[in-house]
Length: 435
Image (tube, rainbow, N blue to C red; front, side):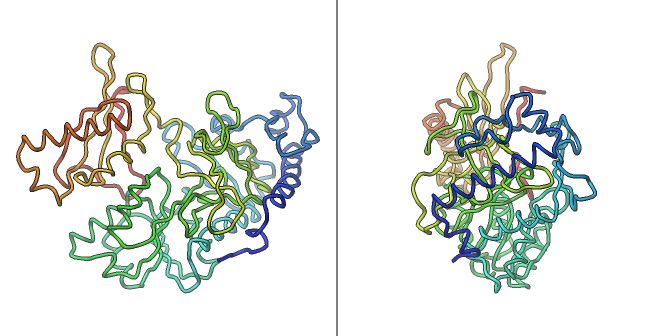
């Protein structure tokens, strides 16, 4: 049950004492060796010695994605490049890419964190772990790769795409663990069904680790119903390491290891800390990160802290599933909407399938509108074969979305296999207001 019993069985008091000690060390090293942090803290007239308790972390400023872009490529590093053993970077599709650098110690920390998560969810050395996250500058594939090997599992580094080969190797190698985006897992199950195969009946798959995009509890249920596997939620960003934390077998929140991370939930507008249960932006401080310290990193991801203790017995903090990114949120007629809210509401309706798209438009009068395109569930196609019945369903889905979103979109019910499929991160929103 425990990969690292000493760390994972720490009490809340022991974790807080350890966190305070490591926080002081982490801030001191950043202040001494990173010109970025030294300048940032001097501007705020604060020093590492100002940390007397964990509450004092709020005295220190946040680090934002723009800071990485402004200091591209190596401006946040605290050590010479000669001591950096690996570089990762974002795609840079919305601006300069963000670069992260790792020492050997950083890679060990990242691997240790994810290894604990995989083990807590049930991965063992007897497993065959097929990794369908991308390898390369994206951190996903390599994170799972090294964590799987540390446990002793047999790793299949197939990377993303090539769905037929994914299924072939899954069956030929007897893969028991699979890692990819949730949207790709849905596509694989759909692809297998067309080929006359069943994930549950024709493979040995038992656990799937899904992340890199927000997904709802209802989507988890659909994945598990279609495939017969346990669907485990994963979280991470390249700035804090990569995919670093997961749910345990209880599937009741993502465990952040308190001896490695300090997490906060803040009001995205004011920066003030929120109480457990209140939704806000996740802020992460990585304790002991050497190459590129991350102190109060604003992830942009919206979630909430979970106050209740997990049934697994660990006292480490947990967060709820990611609702979306603050910069993914869009506003329609004064209402804030996250794509994950649309997904959650749609997945409550058995008549619609898992594939959907959101289109945002603006007319000549400057009025915004939202169109939700969703495929009909093939099992219900005959029930809605007439145009009248289809229009009736569209109206019902639109009203259902209005109840959940407080805004009524236009709904278009499409035939199965109409919308695009994704072998990596799903692109759910087309914002034509920006074109």
